[in-house]
Length: 133
Picture 1 (cartoon, rainbow, N blue to C red):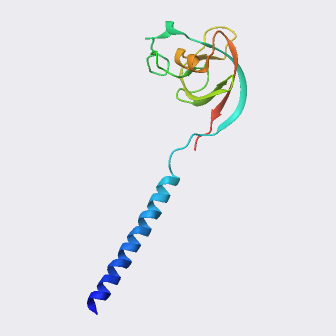
Picture 2: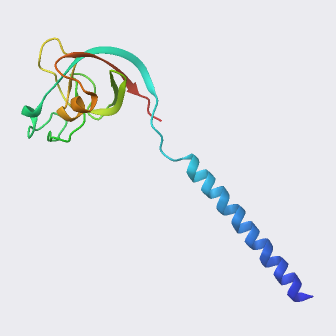
Picture 3: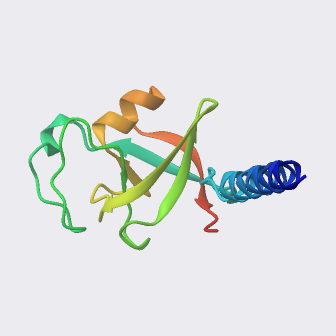
């Protein structure tokens, strides 16, 4: 009789451990990072800083490299995350520098971002803020 009670108790404990494990897994999965939503939709003129900017120190404390994906903007804070859309291609990026210093542009895109979007010359882009969670 004692052996049967012990087996039932162990089975109950195993069932309880499985339920707790499922609950923790579900809770952790719900907190997984997700892509933020875009807030606002604006248009602006943007161009690329091009390869000539490689190696230059940015106002935000970084160094522009061939693989740096980001934008320069005169007033958005360094690190601000923004969505940039051009010809249906939407990219989540961040402010990595000040600028542009070319009249008529509101944004300078790094060479890597411009290539990714297929942007050449000065073009109209759409942009919006990435809503922080």
